[in-house]
Length: 235
Image 1 (cartoon, rainbow, N blue to C red):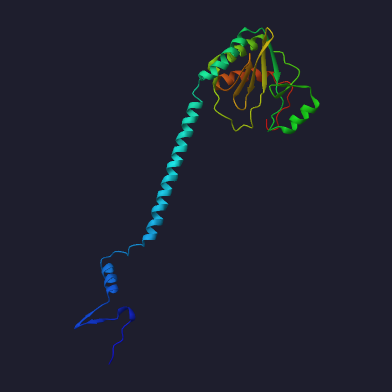
Image 2 (image 1 turned 45 degrees about the vertical axis):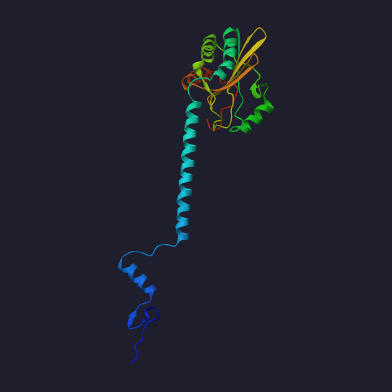
């Protein structure tokens, strides 16, 4: 009687000894040892490249985050840089010495109230000041409020170094305050939305962020002079 054997377990005869094929020995040895077969070298390469790429991306993300935090911290350090002071000091000196003050009210916002802005430009008398539209008729400013605004807008503590564009639809001057003296005009444009100032005078120009406390005081004074601009749709 002949015995049948599967192809995978065919016996090999060497001399008088009967042995299993070498491949079966390796398979049995790994199975008895409880170890899984080693993955191919190609798979190891793919895994290594994946972890290396992930680590590099994480490092880039951490670097960008650290740089962003450093930039924000330095941009809002609460004081003007030396370069800012070279522009600010002559303007502040001119405002302090000036005797005449004029307040202009800004038109509706160029992004959030476009339709209203277009209507106002067509139907109202306006004037352009440093590229921004204002109602032509100036508003009477009380002596008390004029003095308070002069103090706030000549105090360097009210200003911070400009930290970049804000997500507020762009600089929009709510008011312009101008001081005149000896044929020179010193002007400050004030944006409540961005909490920013633009200052001009004596050949100098400066854009800054505002100190929050100072801006709240300025806004509290000027809100009383809202006389010509239509109420915004969202306000």
